[in-house]
Image (cartoon, rainbow, N blue to C red; front, side, top):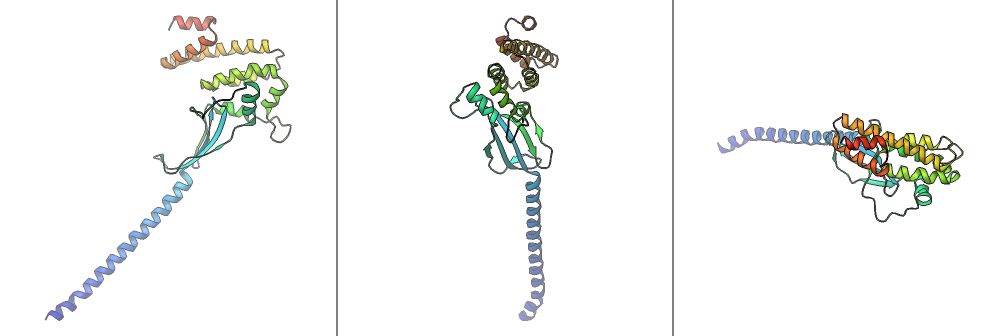
Length: 243
């Protein structure tokens, strides 16, 4: 009797084992497929790259890493490489004559690309575009480096102002300044006077806009910076009195 019972149980047991094996293989295959799909998604959409600029040292660097898309969870170390434009190096060493010590602590975003999306340009790109500007005279020729070599007195006016604005993250004020410097003004004194007037007016407009937008803290900081540069400007003094 016991032998008969044993034989009757074995087929069911064998079928259950086969079903378990099939389920296990299905689970393994599904896990592998999910890993492959996830890997492809991360490979394509999870790649993050861009560049950033340190105004204190006038250096730029590229960066890249991988993240989990949507959640923006970084999953690989950040890889960085120097990409400082020749113009920036020339300005730092030949015009500003600065040799900053240590490593930069403050980096401003220049560009950012995530996956297949288009590259987003941050405010610092306004300065990098000028640093990268080609003069069309040959390979690796930089417009503002050539301009600075040919106009050393004007360069001594322009670049300290640009450097100061970069440290304040006021890149939006730079395009007009570069246009003025490139307008053919003959004397550095005249260039300084015109740029100072333009910047004071730009500060006045920007501070007014920030106040109207309810950004009182930003407006106050801008006003302090503006008054430190242009303490006798009538419009800025009025804003200070109405603060």
